[in-house]
Image 1 (tube, rainbow, N blue to C red):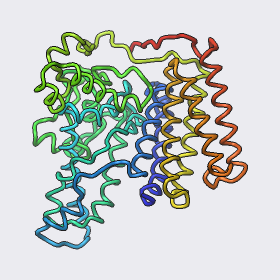
Image 2: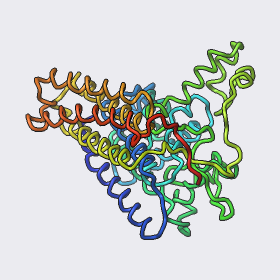
Image 3: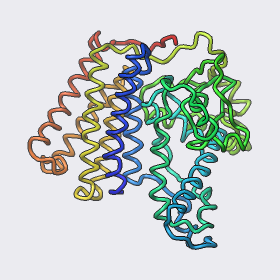
Length: 423
């Protein structure tokens, strides 16, 4: 828990720096790769995911350590070759995990948020799931366990393999020559994120593209088919917590509404997008098939609201890093209560970004929760000291007042229904 939090102290600022570099490079090249609200939504999704992971809010069905202990045939030491084998094994498992998340109905809920952005840039790489509660696919590391690759080696390799998937989420890098035959490149991953029929459910590889070529899921990027990004049932919200459970909610409603007991069970395990016939007829869901004239989601936020949303994101990041650096001192149950405040913060300000009528209510809850935590901590925000704690108190009150202003003033878009913007 603490080791992962310390790794994120380095990784997250590095990712943010690369996002800024990408934006500067895009402007110098005369291109546009970011939209403010979309980038804030992506970064906010990253916050919810890393907080969940640092707090250990997931359950493993089977552990790698157990597999090594009971199934290992060999016993090998941690040499450089072991690290290479571990990386290959982790990437092989990642390919099949990724492929199943795309092709099994209930597993898509774990992954939809990563594809929910209608842009393709470095910030969308941070759209990671908060709904991945159960770790289901440790068994895919069975080859590594049989070889006796130590648990400590896998623990080191796993975050490296994960962080190495960040760089290729960009439109600024074209095809990369012979590397296209070996590793996943930006061109390969643009295909993966696209909704076009030519590209759908292709290029599942995480580091090595050879898995796709071996298992029949490879598709090169075509000059005549520009990728269209997003999901075929657009999420139409900036709120990452809503996106994270949106598909599950549809499955739950379908299971409840269908008259067939067989369909109530099997719909969870059918191919992604499958719905019982009686429910699909009575409760149709709009699915994108023709991308001519496709319009991206845009809540038509004013410049002041966009600026305020960046402030909210920045404050939440600061509070997140305080948790990561004080996690041992805060202890249990404080770290989980702190985490709940961060989740509520993200939910609240992204609700305002959507210009939802619930924004004042959610922000009021956050203000009450935050002030309550300060009182519980003796008016010292988890060891932050007087000045920092009073700053948290002031921000809770200011944020509530600013939300009221945006909710009811025409600058915030009173009563405005979220619109879309053409590509």
